[in-house]
Length: 380
Ligand code: TYD
Ligand code: MG
Image (cartoon, rainbow, N blue to C red; front, side, top):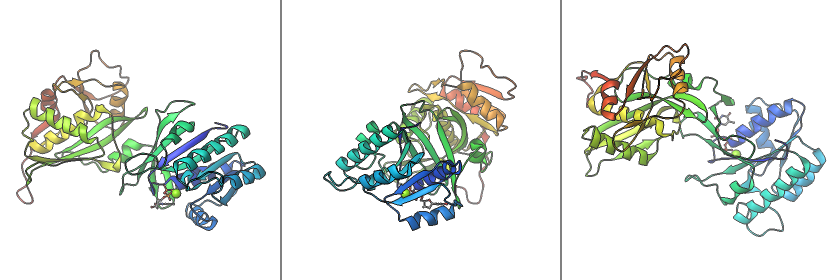
């Protein structure tokens, strides 16, 4: 959007500079000059990165500078069609007190850039660091000033990255982009469900496929759980990629409403692919994975599951049921364990068996198959 200021926020090392450089190169290729300003790296460092990404630099105007007043002078000269500033925490204005990255500097620099962007009708992308606890380093006020806030996220040790809309003055925030970080930069993942399920092997205890929504896009993701008898007084619960408090709630409901004796069990839940899932529709998947591991019963082969769990052990319906089912069918799954629906879902040419459950107990009966024979060697 001409004149807009977009903040791309993420932890250091997640790939913001890479994303911004690749995006700049794509726009510059259409003969639209892009001003790429780095306050963190020298021109040589940016060039090295560009080479690694197979970017020849055509149409890209690099500047290594952190003084906003000087940057704006340069921008006036080159009249770019897009400006990238990496990162806002390294920028400063001479006449403002405080170090770069301080609340006053970040706020004033952003306002100054905003004014220039609006006067010249040029979109500006700002990179911003967030700390581990998720707040944007320095000021939270930054989010209120800019027009659009996007979070760029990924788990350490995973190559997947998600770009997620948090605030958007011009449209929906309900969209996500999924990328994979490779040797030559970020590549968009065209068929995310397939990519995320590629390593899923069927019929293992504790492993469940959930049909979740990332923004408006349905996505199949593998959830794993492992329960083991604890050697501590207080059993441990570990949540990787799901909300910790949600996990505690689901364990409590499994204990109280489905009779699973989890009070002396360590419980670990993991989302494979390094994604973070936050919607309640994955509740039933978490519960099924835990129950599967605990009872040594495998989930139904080639199945997906979704549904929200209430405190009474009831399974609640969730938004966009049809799209979730269709995504499971598209990936060749045969069965979908879902909440009891008030009316039949409208599914065109979708060949999949639906198992509807009212309660958690019913869901566990429907969703898990026979007890597996324990391996003699290497078992618990
Ligand atoms: P970077 O874009 O510098 O992160 P940020 O600007 O958010 O701090 O990316 C840093 C990481 O990405 C770094 O650990 C190396 C990795 N990377 C790749 O794996 N492949 C690549 O092609 C590039 C350029 C970086
Ligand atoms: Mg960077």
